[in-house]
Length: 128
Image (cartoon, rainbow, N blue to C red; front, top):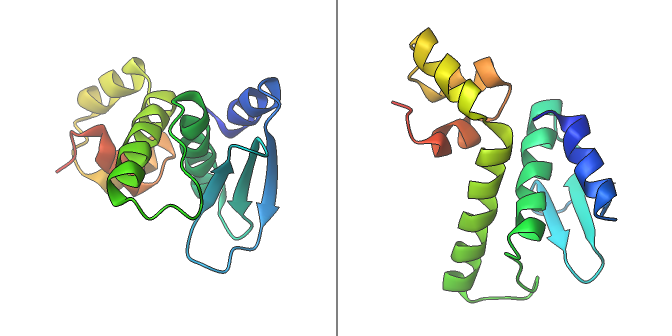
């Protein structure tokens, strides 16, 4: 899925997507109460695509938690569900077939081939 499609999904769900200069080293955040995704303004195009996909995953999987949450179990479960949704949105079954046909096995190869981050490529589960 491409970045414009992800923005269209957000728009369809009436989710605002805004750029923000985060102080901490986070790429994005979904704020359920505001129905808003904040993306760090320093992200490159690939990071932006992968981050918006993950933040939409929080929305679609109801994988949210308060910003002040300190329950690491709750946070980890929510992050896992959102990241899993993002991988499914960004990597299609035909992409998986192409990866196998090309003989790609390293996360950097897969990331470059699919225009995704290495973090997302690693979550596919086939990387060496």
